[in-house]
Picture (tube, rainbow, N blue to C red):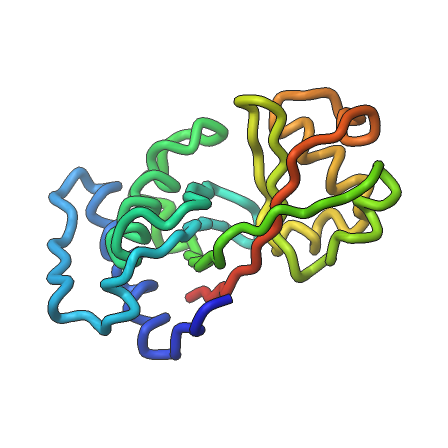
Length: 189
């Protein structure tokens, strides 16, 4: 993982995410981000996920695995998407805003995980450390490292990730998939 964000930088990103979510849910223009006024780390391209929860229950989560735009803009874009465009949930309503906790995960670049069979794959995974991407052709899905808290068994973790990808839960046992890992720095309100 490249240089970690300090507490002030984390607070800035959480502020951007909160203000953006509030404005988007109320149908107001998004806050303008002056990149030149931000620390260099938030001006650099970065990959992030924004996760919304209400009392520890997922309410929305959207992000990207590839850094392609400034970190502050990336967080702003994903705050809107997590609140209004996560197909698994209806759009966040104004009455929910006070209950929502925002978490930001800043991702390291992905690394391919080379393995030889299902047992070797399980041995090479690092629960609570690695986010995992599974890919078969055009199908692709990821779980952030935080998902290990709810799915601590590596076999179950991979099976659920296959289902998220739209494949059978045992595909990872039957076929050699492309696997990538990454780490995150996560922080929340």
